[in-house]
Length: 203
Image (cartoon, rainbow, N blue to C red; front, top):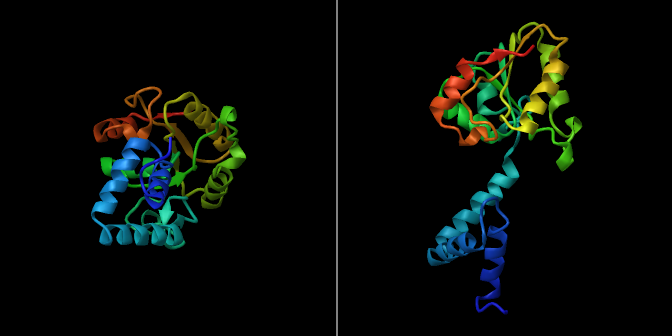
């Protein structure tokens, strides 16, 4: 069935529907909203996306989002440099920061080990983490493994614990509280705070 919509509008809907969690109907509503408030909204949105795409890059130390070599967290002198919280995605950093229960540094893996989906350790920033801990010895006293409590998240944590076994630092895993099979970004602030407080040493 041919679309009754203009071709340029169809293209906008198609591109919006490529975004995560955005289906055809939602993309259509967003496109209509943008057109209804154009040209200012369309121009501002296009400018913001272009600028973000050109300027945002992974932090060279922790792989969170940054505009410079280091992100705002790594540059913050008030953060504790002796503790590193390892998470899967930038979303997880945002979730922990929103919870306000952590004042150390982070390391973003950019995913989790999942052989079923073709993601192996070398596809993540694991080697950078190990190099970072090795160079900082003995100043990094604890590495918190805060991967999601899923099959792949647990497997990633176990792999990291094994790789970190030879370093002189405490290796811990976030405690109970986050529902099994869920994503950290979906957990509420109190749950994340308790998960950090109840972290346990990895044997």
